[in-house]
Length: 143
Image (cartoon, rainbow, N blue to C red; front, side, top):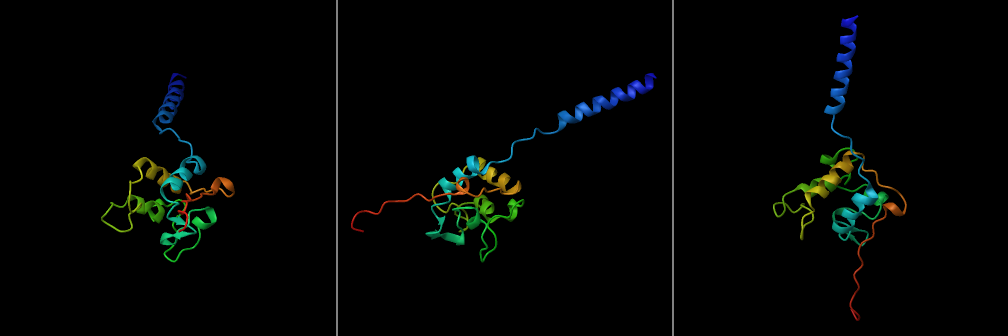
């Protein structure tokens, strides 16, 4: 009987220890609150229907996932095969494909969020939550 009790206690101890050894689960990356602000601030002004650099339009889900001659920009589940992520990791000034091409680099934490979002399946909502609008600059009068 003592041996059976020892086996049961050992099993409980192992189960308890293994649950502590697992890394804490984090909430999935949310497009509307985490990814959309990055794309709005860093990408949309060069990647929309009126400025289609790299044949990439980030105004909404349909356009972001549209077929492009050079292949998809976002490959859900595979950040290392997603140019949207890869170009953010390239060293600046060493390759013309590094993004953004000028100005400040996107902080590593934000690049990591994009990587994680793509790894999680790149869920991009339809409707208003998934729409990104470029900043509109006013033309000077008479131009």
